[in-house]
Image (cartoon, rainbow, N blue to C red; front, side, top):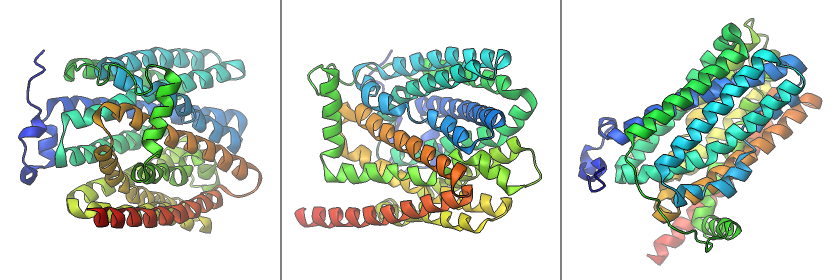
Length: 427
């Protein structure tokens, strides 16, 4: 292993940074392809479990709760496990998480073939919880490793490409997931998910260089609780980082259509199988995010990206207000795609966050930020599902969520503007 090999990003000037420059870095290619496969498999599993539970219960609440089970474990993973991305070699951690998830999802596939009701269904949901728990240290390690592989504006473009990979995987997994579930049933979809974890582990193992752990001891002096508290102080003790994290957490409000996809699809009466319509609803937002991320990273100059952060965040949430008007399937998908395009503001937030965090603390910082994001999504989706089941139509619930998010986004945009003004005065 040649640890002194130059990073490809270091020899690419800002004037020549293109998407081709990003893909010229071999380690990034391996991470990117592993991400596409893994995410696509995950969405297959989500569609399979969501449709399976809704088909068994016909309950908006239980359908939303099943989706939330893939988010809530981040409260444990983000706080307790993300620090592993700093204390352990990041490549080995990612491979270990992939292999463990491959085994767990394989067990879920077997259970779905034998007993998809009663205790068997509960065990599958519990295993899904553990699978998601392992996602936290995996993503923390990946996010922390990215600035070591790509630097400068190459990193910003790399994040855009990664977001595109994430959303492409979600589009493929969700859009095709409904068809796969309809043809192969839940067991087949889960088996494919297990296979994607295996391939992802191979790509990371053989496509990414081994690097030593970033930090030999935690900021909390070795105590797990101390390290957790040190991470919380790092992320929330500074106004700039706190505002950026809260911008990231706005996804809570525009992700609600994912949690209510099955009941929303059932209410649209689109004339398609429920699994197919659900998959299309799942896919619309990520498709918009792909287009938005490409446009944002290529058309908006680097010095102007931070200025777009607030307006795009407001748009990502606010456009969902249109779903209060009981639109048909095509119009609903268009609204969800526009919301996803507005979510490209996350690129600017991510770049600013990386610049403000010490390299040896990136894993924990990303883990805490992502953990909180996933936890609030899960809790909000459960609440939205309960309201949709007993009080309001799914489209109305989504519209209310979007309106609340737009108001919070506007408040954060003002806070960000004040912080920028204060920084300019101090400079």
